[in-house]
Image (cartoon, rainbow, N blue to C red; front, side, top):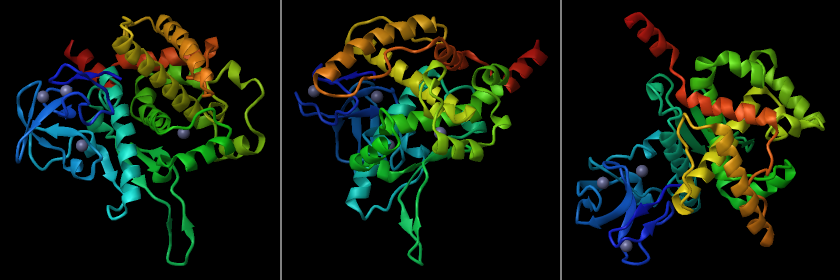
Length: 346
Ligand SMILES: [Zn+2]
Ligand SMILES: [Zn+2]
Ligand SMILES: [Zn+2]
Ligand SMILES: [Zn+2]
C-alpha cells in the first residue's frame, strides 16, 4: 500500500490514525487524494498537503473512517459505497464494521490505482458497486437467518461475522483454505463484480477460452459437486486454488484475488523497498509476477521463521499465469459502447 507523509516528515502508513512523533491527526484528504496530517479546528480541519479547509467524513463519528471531504456533513467517496451498516447500538458490531470499512478502503484504493472497475470508463454509472455488511439474525419463529457472503449485480454482501478472527479461523480450517482474510474476501467478491461489470463485456471470447463458458455449467450443480466430491487431484496444474475448480465464475474471482494480492505486494515493495517495478497496464505482466514471486519466496521464509503461513504460493503454473495476464490486460480494454462511438466518429 502507498504511504503518505506527516507535517513532521514522518512516514504515514495506511493504518495510522495519529502521528507517533508529533501527535498530529492523520487521514485521507478527498481533495488532494493524499494520506496526510490535518490541523483540527473547531468545525473543520485544514489539510497539511493541499492547505484546503476540509470536513470530517460523517463516519469518523463512529471511528470507522479517517477521511476528510470538501463539503461538511458528507460521507467520503469510500463510505458512500456502503449501502447497509450494522446497528450502531452494539459496540462490538461497530468495531467489526470498522474492520470491514478498513479492508474495503484498502480494496477501493487499489482498484482506483490500477484503473479497474468501478474506476474505468463510466462503470460506476452503468454498473454501480455497492457493499452491505450484514449480521446473522433470528426470525420471529426463532429460526436462524444466515447471511451468505457473495456478489449479485454490483452488490457485495459480507457477513459481519467474518470480521471476527475466531469465526474466520474456524471456517478456514473447516473449508481447508490456506488463508481466509477480510481483504481476501473483498478481493474475491470484487472479482465477481469485475466479471459482471467488465470482463464479460470487454473480452468474453478470451474469458471463455481460459476460464470456460459460465453459462454452460449450472452453478447450483457445480457447487453441490464441489462440496461432495472436492476438487480434482491435479487442480494446482490449472487453478490458483481448489475452490477455483468449482465453476468458471469462481475461477475468475479467485484469479482476480491473486492478481490483486500480487499487485499489492508489488506496490508495497516499490514504496518501502525502493524497487522500481512497472505496475502500469502496459507493463510486462510475466516479468512483474516473477519479481513478486521472488519477494514471496523471501517473505514467506520470514513467516516460516515465526511459524506463520506463506505469503502466497511460491510457484504459479503456466495456465494460471495466462489467466493472470488476462486480468492484467482488462485494465487496458475499452468499453464496447465507447469503442462503437469512436468507430462511428472516425
Ligand atoms: Zn507527525
Ligand atoms: Zn488535501
Ligand atoms: Zn468515510
Ligand atoms: Zn465466489
